[in-house]
Amino acid sequence: MGGGLLRDPAQVNRILSEMRNAISGLFTVKMRIGFADTSTFEPILDLIDRHRIDLLSLHGRTVKEGYHSVVHYDYIAQAVQRVNCPVLANGNVTSAATTATVLAQTGAAGVMVGRSAIRNPWIFKQIRQYLTHQPLSVPTLADVRHYIDLLYQTTTASTVAERSRVNFLKKYLNFIGQSVDTEGGFLSAMRRAQTETELFGICDRYLLTHPELPFAQEPYPGIIARPSCETERQETSQLEALRT
Image (cartoon, rainbow, N blue to C red; front, top):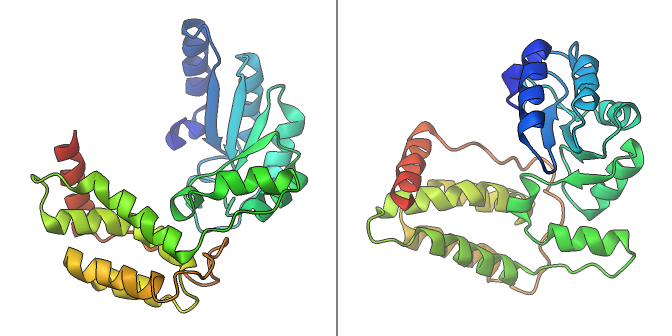
């Protein structure tokens, strides 16, 4: 549900009631633990039960905490104990190993993976392997370079300007780059690239010099996926409008 709604349980009640009456199949909800604080957390959990929600995905931060605070897994554990439906834990699920830790801490029925799936699309297979005690499939830097090519192929329409294609790809490289090198050199270099030739040259230098090396399962400490600048956001919006 929209983060602003968490300030108004009465409105949440009305919306869930109308939707529950209109939905004959499974009805799921995704939410955070509050807006500026957690004062409405328990009342809204009660509404989840009242309207017979089938699955709750819960991000363990408030809206105001964004993505950079600690994740309050204790609130997810509280929800698991309080509501009648299964709960998925969301927030900083960065690898197969952290999945196991989060599940142990919260008792959740499963996890929801967000930004880490952009950085590492192999994470879902790795989680299944880890939880069933199988050997982990670890992609190489060459695999990551191929993944980047696949992302690029979604932006090759002749009507899209090169600068817009470059900035579109940078959105994803901001996440991928968290696991490329320990010093953050890849991120720093790719953010300065202006052309496709420059950008792919940087990708080749960091990913194909030693293509057999493993791609890190966790983001390297201190390597942060910085949001794009305003110009890049505008150009990305133009690109996505052209694609639709």
